[in-house]
Image (tube, rainbow, N blue to C red):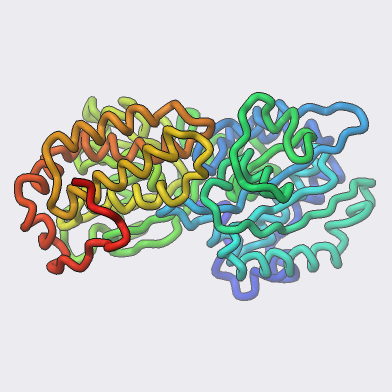
Length: 451
């Protein structure tokens, strides 16, 4: 039975409220930090824990905190990235909805560690219910003396504000988020300087994911070394996974890192297998931006070992035979799913969400969408497969932010592992159009066919 650190009390009635959260041990980490630990002590515990960023990059959180510049007389900021926009990922929204005080407690502990006296939670604009929930939680915490001036008599002051975004996927990138928070268009910044040196309003800033910040609570309560005992290798602790697609039991799960992918898919404790008795065809293990893997490679690594739910194991073999933990958006496809159509769907998203600042991304995402649409709608040529490969290759690594990579990787992996399906679409155009959907009206009249 997997342990739960973040979702322990998720089903307790009223856990969204301060009083119930407090009754179940809430805000002990704040008391411990402010009364018995220095800011450097908190940072050291997070380092000991081995916690890695849960938003996708997987960079060690404690190390990221230690990079924060501390010039005299200059404010520092903590910004929580709640702009959860990755297709297939919804665990942060779940956390903010059902146990908002866990995030708020983590914000207070993390802000104290960083010396931030003003912190922000930036939430995707479509999540208005979650924004209201967080604002209510802030009011409750402030009324109880856990926010504001001289928290718990420690001499530490902190204000936390919730800032709605405007629904732009690009604002999940930390520098674009900071631009948006400053009231500007959400375009990524060229780095360096990095936010740790010149972030929000030109001041030292740390940007962390919702889950990363919430994870500091059990780390402080139990100690970094205890947290590090969970998991394996450099993948320590627990991880929230957003499971969706053709699964018997989709949902949000908290797993110990090191669980096998096979157990996660087929165990009754987790996803319960593939829905409707179908066979597994492929999995996107970390949200739409990471490479898709066919059944044989998602269950086993290239050398025959069981594939594990860890940063290292999912990436084993590089993008030739591996993928990425990403944001934990685990999407399963059964044997009836069309990889070409799903890849086209992802490409539509990235074309729509490109900020347009970099020409490889601005132009390349549009071309990939059009060529994929052409193949899916029965107008493709075999040369289009090589054209797609060439376009994604010219995008990857040639943009200011990772959105270009995020658009290129799914296309590259789909061609690498499912080229025969692309060729089938091209060689059987009429069958391809009606194979899964039966009706040609699924063609989008707003997307021009490339001839």
